[in-house]
Length: 342
Image (cartoon, rainbow, N blue to C red):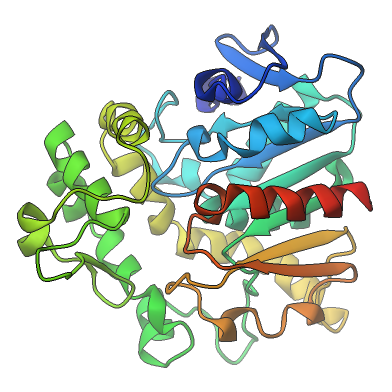
């Protein structure tokens, strides 16, 4: 069954030592774990990570949300850490992955409406899951990456990422042009390569204070060897990222950037229906948490979110892209308040 192949779980709360709640194996999916409260559960929360991450991204949220009385599940998504990374890129298309999420929920939370959360590509997957399978959701939230329409109108047709960068629609997505190139797979296939990539992604700079990652150019490979050690996360956490992702290299994570045309074609069916009704709106309660210092997602990208959501709550934190571990207490407080008001 597809779901057994593409999802794995880690005991996030157990590895951080931040939580005394129970961590048990999910018997329905071999090798998986969940975090659940000691007493009866208020429901299930499913957390979807982004790139270049894995389920460890939610290490501060899993214990907190469990302490609120929720059963929390945080999978490694396709291509990351302990999951498979099949050759066919269509497996990474968001419609296909939405089907995987639905199959997962049929196994671990049958008949339940859950709360879904996502960050980065996990946010992108959360939006499309909410569009394709709204019947599974009580509410959903995303961090850092706002919703964007999949279809820009019949006169525009398909717009490649290059077009959207050059015409000024999404100029800070220029890095994706580099990351979708197969050459990136070859550049980051060994543990030493992956270590350099994460050092750049997590903010390592040269002696002159120059970083190697830019939203406008991607990774500057020439200065990678000259970066000092990143200081965004503790060394032990950094080693966890390097060791886990080095198991397969970056190809699995980078494949998410190679599905845009597939996603657009899949979403045409939904988009045409939405346009016939005057535009699509999500009816499910939704929270967006802005990361104010995220240079990849400037304010203009989320200035008009209200037109897409019937029940929108928008909050912000003074943090960069990884707000959930840069400012975990603030993010958790926002999530706790919003969940408590559902």
